[in-house]
Length: 209
Image 1 (cartoon, rainbow, N blue to C red):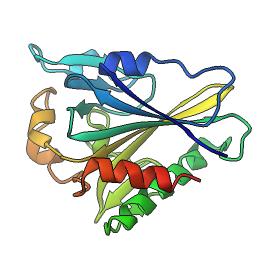
Image 2: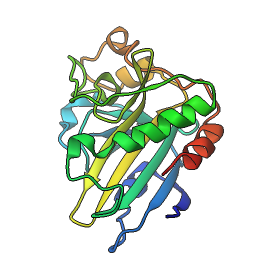
Image 3: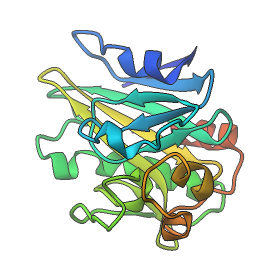
């Protein structure tokens, strides 16, 4: 089956607010954020944000910690599949494996050796506050550091895999927006893909099943 690819230039808040059509079809939504934003997980407390932080703060409807979205620093791609289709899996723990496989294949095409985490959720001291400090099923690492984060929004009709591939990892900028997260503590949890993000996007689209 073919994929419908749409690229949208929106704020992080407006992109997160987009609803998946009903009935859902295979689709890829590529986000071009219009301004920086700190995106909190669905259950993350507002008190994690440092008072006086001068950045748009957005809440997504999927779990995990905060992600700093800076235009040009992150490749943000949502992948949507309909419930009951060939790529749907009732097991939330397995559901994102194929998405991670596509990212790893894309990186391999660009001569970057990546691994897909297919074990259970790995939590750390900082993962409730910082998304890239933990590791979930389907997420992608380079030499043990996360390079692609994936969260899920599931309904009875669809699954929406929200993917963030790092073009640049700036632990200082992120930690400085959060309370009680030392930059040194999260400096080595993630890393840049080390390739042009437009090239990574093109490769990812080629490797979608």
